[in-house]
Amino acid sequence: MFKKPILRLLTNLRFRKKKTGGPVGYAEAKTFGVLVNLNQKEPVRLADFLLSLQHDHKDTHVIGICHDKKKFPKSTHPIVGRKDISTFGSIKAASLQSFLDRKFDFLLVLDQEDDCVVRFLTASCEANYRVGFFSSHDNSLLDMALIPKNEHELDDILKYTKRIK
Image (tube, rainbow, N blue to C red):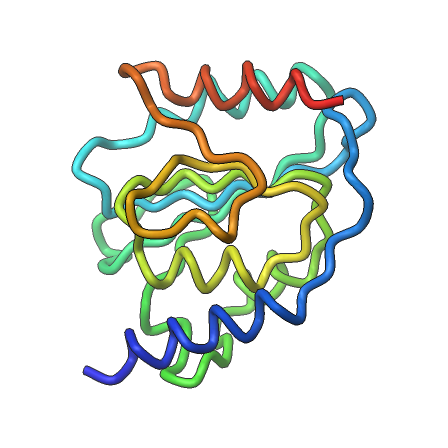
């Protein structure tokens, strides 16, 4: 009940404290973090997207956010739920803490539903550049927000991210 408003407040506080390094172009970038909201109505087709990043020799770390982790028992990537973050923003899952401890050149946020947990984690990650989908609510956490035009929204993110120099 109180978790959403508290997480929103903590999101704003954490984002103000996080200072990103200088911008890094796609060609020089080495590490990519990918936050995926698995609660979306439209499932994210992640496999081809990750293969494209790996083909470009990018060190990619993926974490999925889902309210019910039992829906994805055989996931190849770590999945965290709301219970893995306390009401006051403490991280309970080791896989999530490991993800947040990394410094990314690019953080790709695959969330079209403005989930408060995804926003909190976006603010908590240290990244030079944050790219995600445009939201009618708030885009202040992203350096580049794209409007998905069709079913190939991940291709669009990759296409425009590669143009960053």
